[in-house]
Image (cartoon, rainbow, N blue to C red; front, side, top):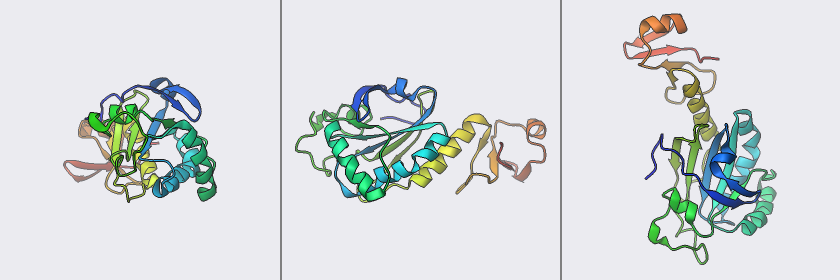
Length: 217
């Protein structure tokens, strides 16, 4: 089972934008890999459309987005037309074809005994394939979220969580519950009060273990 801070498994795959080598494709960027159980399904159609609408916001954060479904690339290409019709946004990011279920198994979405073909599989068979991975430039997994079949993902929340991950990667801070861009953050316990006075003058001590500062620029 994959865990946060594990290296995201590398793979080579066909996508709607040609062959990619995953780690090479990420390069020095952040990446969001989000997977789907089946093409031409209602919840997933709305989700891929939402990402198409939000792709510029991901790009502003130096983040690439890529989808995965266990169907073939040709199916993805046909599905993209429906996604654009529903959302009004063109799918400009790649979608991975995984008809042999190799990547779904590599990432622990499906068990080894689940066969080796997407043919004849229903969304119910692929229910575990509903995961979001946020991956850093170091190719390590920074965040994972799994959703049930019936619950559409909130990609605004994924962007919020991405912002928090990127902030903590740059500064010795954490983010409190429900944090949003521009709000105060929490100083890391690894930062002493003496260091904090130099680096974050005027920090606020709420409790000895809870010190807050304005969000670093």
